[in-house]
Image 1 (cartoon, one colour):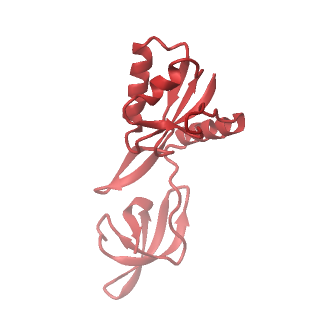
Image 2 (image 1 turned 90 degrees about the vertical axis):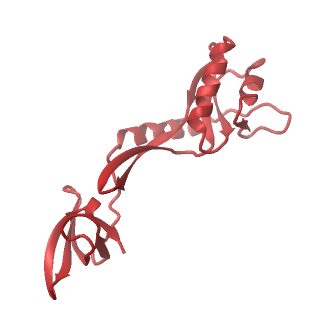
Image 3 (image 1 turned 45 degrees about the vertical axis):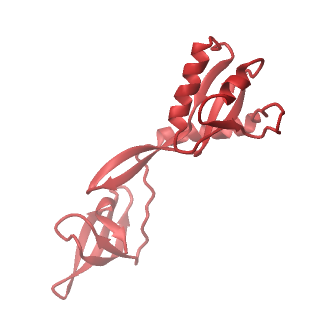
Amino acid sequence: MNWYVVRAVSGQENKIKNYIETEISRLGLEDFVEQVLVPTENVVQIRNGKKVSKERVYFSGYIMVKANLTGEVPHVIRSINGVIGFLGEVKGGDPVPLRKAEVNRMLGKVDELALQDDNVMIPFTIGETIKVVDGPFNGFNGTIENINEEKRKVEVMVKIFGRKTPLELSFMQVEKV
């Protein structure tokens, strides 16, 4: 069994993955296809002031398939709706399997992304001008004086009634101007 990359219509990777799995089991080819994988990562977004964790496709338009591509299997996968073809194949030729190093790197990245579910990058630097988007000081602009990575907070100097006032706000309460 080798890993192959199937090119698919971008944005429909999970739907096409389900089509592939359904078609393989319908035709009884489970012995030839071991695993179908869509590499995804968890992304934290802020919507209406709330943290929302969303799963995003890491390699858009690509599905990884661990299979033994003999006989009808490549033809079955290619004929599935939404599948463009195999990555690296010459027109009319056989699909090219991924090298072991590429597979380890990609699968390692998938595992790494699964582990770091709440690891949001620190998007701010000291001295940067930001806008408060949540809380009682919503709408105020200020400059970042300090960043506390452990607490995931920033210390911001905001001008209120002509006087500079320090505020400690969460990363989620501020955005770049």
